[in-house]
Amino acid sequence: MGAMKENKRIQWQNWSGSVRTRLREVARPQSIDELARLIGQWGRDGRQVRVVGSGHSFMPLAQTDDILLSLDGVQGIESIDEAAGTADVLGGTKLKLLGDELLAHGLAQENLGDIDVQSIAGAISTGTHGTGVRFGTLSTQVAGLTLVTASGELVECSPEQNPDLFKAAQVSVGALGVIAKVKLRVVPAQRHRYQVRRERLDDCLANLERYKQENSHFEFFWLPYTKYVQAKFLNETEAPASKGTLWGNINKIVLENWVYWLLSETCRIVPGATKTVARISGEAISPVEEVDYSHRLFATPRMVRFQEMEYNIPAQHFTAVLAEIKACIEQRRFNVHFPIECRFVRGDDIWLSPAYQRDSAYIAVHMYRGMPYLDYFHAVEDIFRRYDGRPHWGKLNTRSAAEFATLYPHWEDFRRIRRSLDPGGLFLNDYLRSIFEPGALASQPNDAAQVAGGRESGA
Image (cartoon, rainbow, N blue to C red):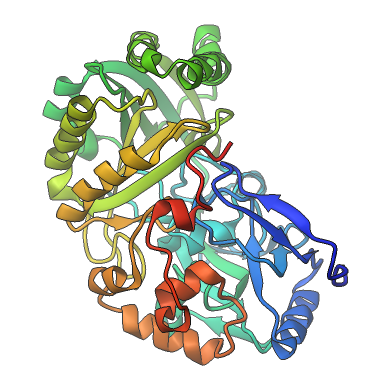
């Protein structure tokens, strides 16, 4: 685990291929004590370190040419306080493992996103969210954090202890320190009924408020160039677990992944086929119904790789924004067959949360890996900008330090705390320095092509 030789570099890339780097060392501590010792030494040596979970951030948050820190050896539930409804969870714990271990104790997280391969620390740090108007982001489930700062010190924070640090650390993109442990609010494990069906876009929008209010978790995917959406509903149930129909499982695993990969490859090779593929995908949406524990239903297998941009907008602007995106795609004839994902989240009080002080809608656009995406993403991002949009921290965007300062009222408070904890910039890479300490760089990356490694395809 020592430093690599200077002339020996390790190649690393993220899940989508949008970020690639050559680094000196990958460190894998096996305990919090070892983690703190290493961080303290690196801080004294003037090194640079970035933490990586599963590499699912599309932005260069984990990019470094020095030390990449994996917390895969620091996983599991340390303790559970059933009376308080909390669990102390090690920072590197992957969400799927966490769900299984909580279920063994009859517990669960109240909400999750649609993939479960991330670490709990990474999901919190980027403001990862699920859907449901009565639920906040995953960061709102945090009751306390243990950080390893640049000096190697373990610092506790919660609403009662170091409250300003807590509000900064709940969504911090790893710029304050390493999250070694999370005190997580948990709820009794409950089975949910998961239902999927095809609807017309117009009908879905006409019923939007009812769907949001009458279902614990609701989201939909609109297929470009079609009149169809795939609508998804999750609600608590006392019904026994069932894995759904054979056709439903084939649809979820085979059609949505392997067949979709073949269709996507067709679009990459023959871009003019995208409209046809989108229409085939819309027509192929099949009903699915199954009952299982919540953490097994929130996540969906994602085997087809893509680039993604996702923005948070005030909930009241959702219909207008989606209409503009639809018109933009059709007028500019973008070759896109991936669906537009639409989710809904309750507002919060976390300083750098995109849902800060507003009930929110999240809209995500995707492009199959290997297909040009910059023009499409830039055009849609211009729409988000007009509606006070805040980007998901882990998804592609081109926002600058000056723009973030206008989007987040506590931006300068966050920067102040960051400097006090890490004055030497141990946890900053070029991208994070460009947004938190822009004066320290001669030039700032201000375009998705630059911050994502300068590649259109990521292939």
